[in-house]
Length: 129
Image (cartoon, rainbow, N blue to C red; front, side):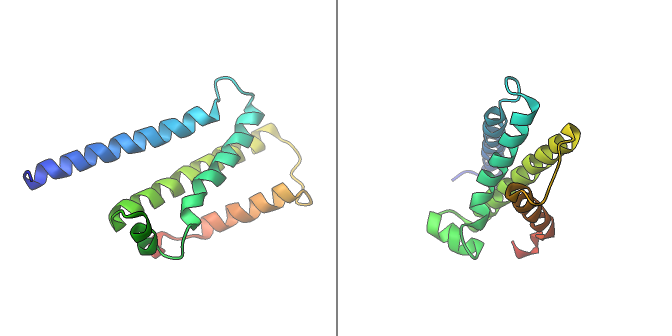
């Protein structure tokens, strides 16, 4: 192959393109330009859950990287990207709920489950990766 610096540059460019596409796909799914703020908030919550799925696929990242046939470094990037996207989508959902000043009863299962997921998300540390 080529020299080491060209391999790193092409890898960085590919990662940048993939991250940009991933962000663009999530933003386009929000459809904030045509939906009401409340619907964007609900959609952000659903997208956060969808983006969390790769985070809970297995017990260890090396198992998943072997299962999908990708390097551990690449799978860590997927894991980190999904976690970051889930966090910001969840934050958007929370901000919309707070700004809309709707009642937030924990007797409503969706509210209770959302609070549990949110609290656990902030409890997770990156040292397990």
